[in-house]
Length: 214
Image: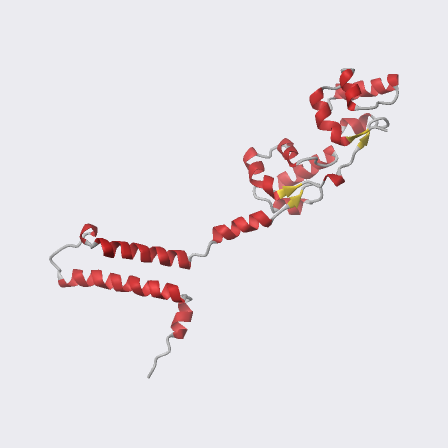
């Protein structure tokens, strides 16, 4: 009469390779125990086990470990690669999905986006208060920036409140821009403001994507 062991195999959940490896391991263990049993007066140390047997046990354990532990880390990495968030269109719920971004940081990222009028590049996340450099390094490949969502400012009609909203302008620079515009009329370019010492080169570089000259 043939005994059906399939229920037992299904209960353990082993694959064919895992069952074969387990059987080999059990046989090796029985062999070592048998030697111990038949030679009771002699202690068996690891050094006395034949080299071939030792490596066979080690390789078998490694085989079972590899087979029985799914590549969770690889799955996590794959999920991480597929997760992308557009920081100009997302809400706080989407930001929280990013590693290292909690409720507080997600709100700050949104508020800074509103202050800027939109992100020009992902590096501007480094300017968000309280966002650690290591967190930025972790999420930099998981965020995108759609610059079509940037709200630009018409510099020749904007008042103090609108210009002062941009964090790259100092108060004195905003006052100087308004005074220069009042005296000279229409501002044609940022270069004009640089040449007349109204703003610095670095400030101009940061605000150029937010300015419209009409």
